[in-house]
Image 1: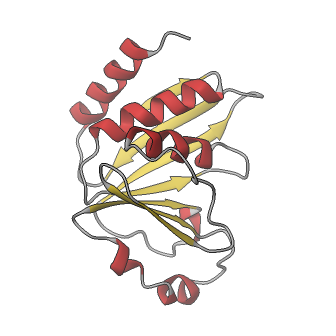
Image 2 (image 1 turned 90 degrees about the horizontal axis):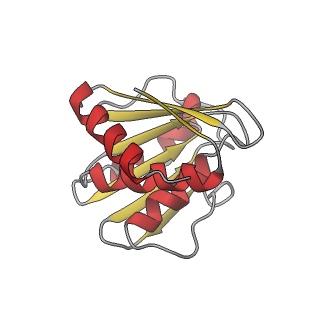
Length: 156
């Protein structure tokens, strides 16, 4: 499913709608170039969970844990270069049924973990972004319902 946003505000709204549709236990994998909007999207996602402050890319700490309506793990693989380094993080500890795990720079995985949602972000203009959502376990009606909710709430 594809959705285009025209501003950071629309990206935050899209993330808020997406977060409202997601259950605890989900693994969300971000793909996108530097500056594509992965962290902006994560801030909107966290906002929907009641996490307003302190959300930024964990590039140097690698993992941030946030408490909100649902626990959120925000992981950044940017600085990791090998699968062995990724394996050394112990990601399985963060893939738990009572939390949502967001991973930036999922391109670093040699093989994607099972039961994931992929969010691909492409820069198509100065503030315009194209989002492609897919999953190995959620079906099209899930994403279509999310898209309708976004369109209903988008007043920009």
